[in-house]
Length: 160
Image (tube, rainbow, N blue to C red; front, side, top):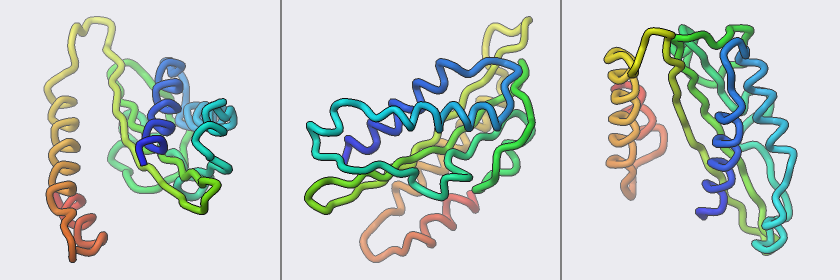
């Protein structure tokens, strides 16, 4: 249901507008939780009766800055601070529950880069990392076919 993905994207965009250099992964993580707490008025219109984090609250979202991108996976946020020349990667999702008993979950990833003072554009190495992530996700989508198990698709993406 697109309302679920749209809600997660709304939260991500709100947080990304507030991210500043010097913030730690823990601080960015807290921003997500603060924005999540504010439930929009449209929830009633769509019959949304509850919203939760898409996975364990203590690791949702995944926030990785700079060298921590290599950690990957569902890890807790650290005291690593965002600096010029660093990427910031967030993996976030919500689960919404409707008044008719249906539920939907989203899982979105976004990545940004903080330019160094002398930079005008993102370095090629960072573009390559981004392109690798996009290609891996595309492989996952391509391999989401009837009869294939989720862990098989996940393995294809992770091995890429």
